[in-house]
Image 1 (cartoon, rainbow, N blue to C red):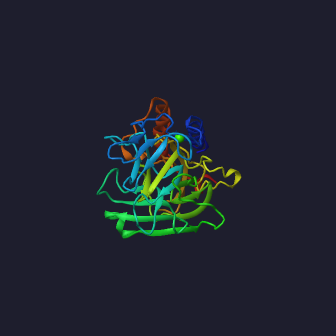
Image 2 (spheres, rainbow, N blue to C red; image 1 turned 120 degrees about the vertical axis):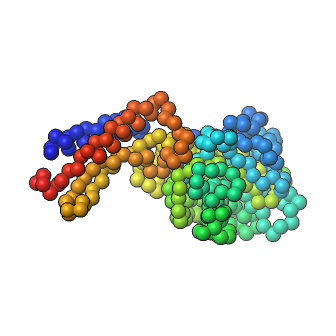
Amino acid sequence: MKKLLSVVIAAVVLAAMLAPAASADLLWTDNFDSGVFSEADWRVEGSAFALTNGGPTNSPHLEGWAEAVVQQSSYGEDAPAPRVYGPNFAVKCDTWFYGDGGNSADEHWVALWWADHFENQIGMDVDRIVYFVRCYYEARKVVIMAHGENGGTEFYPEDTVLAEWQIPDDVELEMDPSAPTVFNLGMRVNGQQIDGFFNNQKVVSATLPTIHQYKCPLLFWNGGCWTGYDNWMVSTADYDLFNEGANMNNGGNGNGGNGGNGGNAVETVIVTDTDAEGNIVTRVETRPAANNGGAATGGNAAKTGDAAIIAVAVMIVALGSAIVVKKVSSK
Ligand SMILES: [Ca+2]
């Protein structure tokens, strides 16, 4: 029995050696200073956002009038594509309000958008819950908002504010064509935890009612005003994108950070259970790592460097199915 246990332990150790170290990665940044939309990064068609030079960041940035609703990261024709993310990411950007853009609505807002898709589908008419971190200009609020679409309406049949923060009176927020206030807006999703950030401060948080592992584009979303965006940054959830330092809440078990193109990482766990005869049994299980975001999408073929890890995973699964350790009898 001890020998078998040793084999299991050795396999776990081997897996630990071969598995990629949990890494907090900055995945993608775009300051638009190249002066062009990269079609590998952004889905350009249908966008009413324009690349414009100057502005409050004094550099190329995105600018949209009221009818410029979304600018979304690229996903290509065949998912998964490079710029889609499961529930393990953080994103932030600089943004500002130039004016109402001719839209006389009572409220104008800017937002970041991500959706929890219930199946590996991207586009309209899919089952999902969409999440916004929005900054409202007139009401001076930052909120996390959710609404369901199709099957997602079971959870949120209409726009629902999950968390709300009032911007303090002493914080400047000017809507001004020539000198708008630049602020940064952020969203982080780590498993079922969602956080919203304003100027690198975590100001709103909520727990998602459900979570799936499918990947989705990230969007700038313009709530009907004349606005600008710049300095886009995307990272894994455990990367310190908001300069939180020691206060950073990883919100998980430390296994996060599998990278935006992940989906191949595995974790090995020891499961203790009781069998039909009441014996305590222990087995080793290997499964896609938590917060992986990719294993279920069906398209994440192992890259060369991952082949060894997959092989170890298969080996451990085989061991796990063969070994049932009866702790009771090993006393
Ligand atoms: Ca720029």
